[in-house]
Length: 405
Image (tube, rainbow, N blue to C red; front, side):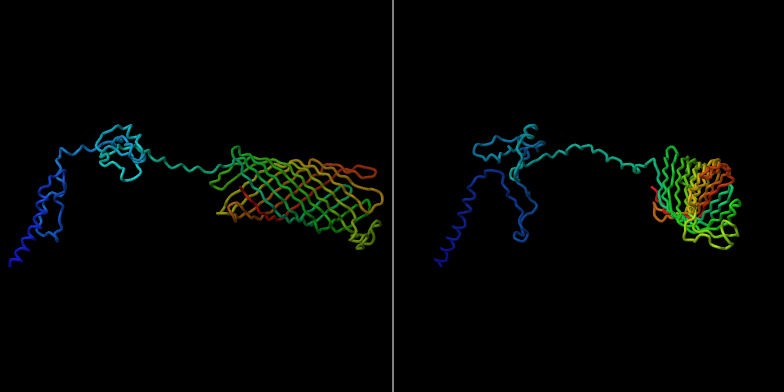
């Protein structure tokens, strides 16, 4: 028993000695005495007490409204770790000149609690109004055509020479330029091809000749240019215009062989062949220069479908023709010069727009020029005779591809 009592007294003394030493220590600063204890570890602990340091209100400094001024840098402190003096008001300029912080440890606690003033924000600019791309004052139409035609040529003076059923195959290029501000436009075309087939009848009562020859080895060349004024309503798909222009038209026709249509001393029995049809007999080389005045129109009838056409009156035309004999030994030609000619020209197309800027079309065309005023000279004596009639006509169908922009 004595040994047990001695052990208990020793245990009590050992436990009381640390408690006595804690009670003797004086508090040096504000402490955190009431840290909340776990309900599990301390079920009987009072949880209603203060949970923050018991610091008097007068000991708390007023929150800073500007960053603190940097404190003098100690000679022992690193150059890149200059601390701020906590609690000082400082100067705004000095704060702006303070070195930037390099770590979270260098930030000053108690940053400004003031709400910064609202900075006016400029309103976003209104969306730009859509501006269409630059529109050229010019409009263009260009393309190519194939013209299948049939033509005839009439000459009448001391003899008659009629060229009939001459088939033409020609290609042409065309262009039209419109200046929209002034409504003025210029258009033109140029083409050429060959003439095949047909026949020519020649009657010369004075020479007792009545013959027929085949036509082959011929050529066709033509061009025209017009200047006009157009009135257009794009919303309705309608365009009307008036123009004046110039037309150049040249045909060279060669007759092969001579067949006697009637008995004549200078040919032979009726139905006989005086010259084989493989031999060229004579040539007509005809050139027209004409002035034309007319109008044109284009109308959109359905979506993508348009009808267009033009009609021209020829108030004046002039023709020159050279009748070249190939079977005579001595040079012998007939030169014809006709003026005060007149005529008419017309064409019409129906087109379909296969692409926004591409149209395909089919059309018809007629050209006819006539004169009965002029003179005829017969070489080598150059005897003159009056011209009774000279005419050239050609008509046919066209196939077209046209681009617009």
